[in-house]
Image (tube, rainbow, N blue to C red):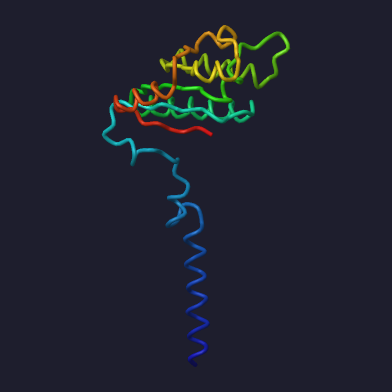
Length: 170
């Protein structure tokens, strides 16, 4: 008799778990809700962020990161939060923010488009001149939306002193 009760209990437990996994019932309903950032953003009026892009060297990866930054900005705006953004390029990432030439790859064009979109949305775009000199890059070859600053360590420190959060992008 005891073994029969255990089997019945097991069957009931499996049945309950199955019901909870069915969409529209129990916990599965929570999993279907649209993800949001409301826990972190409740009470926030302005989102002050510096995206520190340093060691990104692959164009496809840069495109994905820039699209993620655009998405974050757009979601903040949709949540009625004013984004105050800075995108700081330094180190090897500087090679990816050059003006696309006539034989530009699709990724180079997308990087240019994303940088333009971010700038139009009010983001400041900065490149580190110290790294420009080390890498022997031409400042005039950068996308026009990008401002060259003397040293991004000072820039990043200054923004942090003004209350900006620094998000490393690698």
